[in-house]
Length: 410
Image (cartoon, rainbow, N blue to C red; front, side):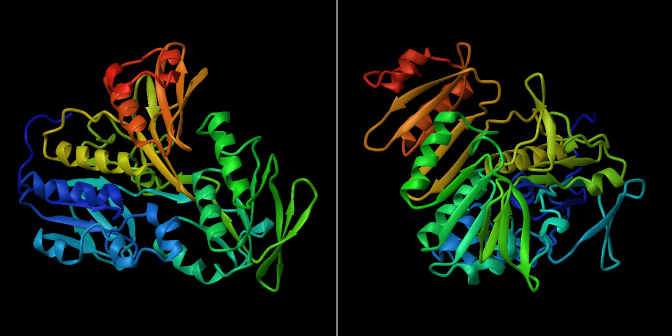
C-alpha cells in the first residue's frame, strides 16, 4: 500500500464511462485534482443513467438527453478528456499505458477500471443469435427494440429477476401480450423472500402478465433469421414476436485478467478500491471488494456512485476505506420497491403493513436485521436504512406492530 497524498498533477485514466467511471471523474475534480483526467467509453454517448432505460425511456417518457449525467459541455469545463466510441484492447502495466483499438495509447499514473458488466447471452445453438432477441443493458439495446413495442405484439421475457419484471411491466403498460418464464422455482429467488416474490407475482397477474415459474427455455425457433416461437422446458411451444432476455450478467474482467491483475468473480480490490497492482483501482459492477467476513460484488447504482467516489479519494491518497451501504430500487406498474441492506443468509421475515397498498418485509438472521424490502412505503424504507447502517436491530415483533412509530426505534 502507498501512503501519503498523490501528486495533484498525476495523470489519471478511467476505463468505463458508466456510473462508477463518471462519479470518479467528477469527484476527482471536486477534490481539486489538477492533473489530466481521461475518461474512455466504448459507446458514442456521453455518460448516462441506465435504470431509466427499462422504465421511462422505453415508455417514451424520457428523452436521451435527459439520461445524461451532465451535458457534453461539463467535460470541457472540468477539463475531462472524454474519449467516446473507444475500445481499450490492452493495459501495459510496466509502461503504464492503455492501448486503444484505433492504435492510440494513453499514459497513466493511476488507472481506474470501471468496466461494468455485460448480459449473459443465450447460446447460439438454442437460437440466441436470432433477430428479435434482445437484452437490456445499454442505450443501443433499448433503441434497437423500441420498434417492437406495438399493441398486441407477443413478447416472451426470459428471467424473473428485476430486469425481467421491469421489462414485463413496461410491455404490459404498452398493451403487449406478455409471458415471463423463470427457470427457478419462483421469481426473484436469488435476491428476495417468498413474500416479496408473491407480492410481485400477484401484481403482474393483476395486470395480465402470464408468469411461468419452474419453466426454462429449450430453444427459440426462427422463421428465416427472426424468432417466431419458443419451445419451453415443459414441452409447450409459444408463438412470439420478440424476446427479452434477463438472465444475469458477467463482470467485465478480461482487461484486468489479461494484464495480470487478480480476478475472482470480479476484479479483486482491497478496502481502498486498489487492485493487486498498486497503480490500478477498480469500482462498480466489475469490482469484488471486502464485505464482512468475505467478499461481494454489487450491481447497483448506489454502489457505483459511492465506490467510484471512494476510488477517486484513494487515487489521491485520501481514502479511509470503502464501506458499502447497499440500497436498490425497482419501479413496476404503480409500485416503487426500495431495498435497504443485503438479505443474504436471512432465516426469518417480519411483515409490516402500511397505508393503502404499502407493505414491507424485514429480513432477519436470528435477531439481527439484515435488509428490508419496502413497497410504496418510502418512510419505512428510510427508517430501515438508517437502522441497518447504524447496526440497530429492533425485535421483529416490534417492527411488525403498526402502532409502533419506527422513528422511536432510531
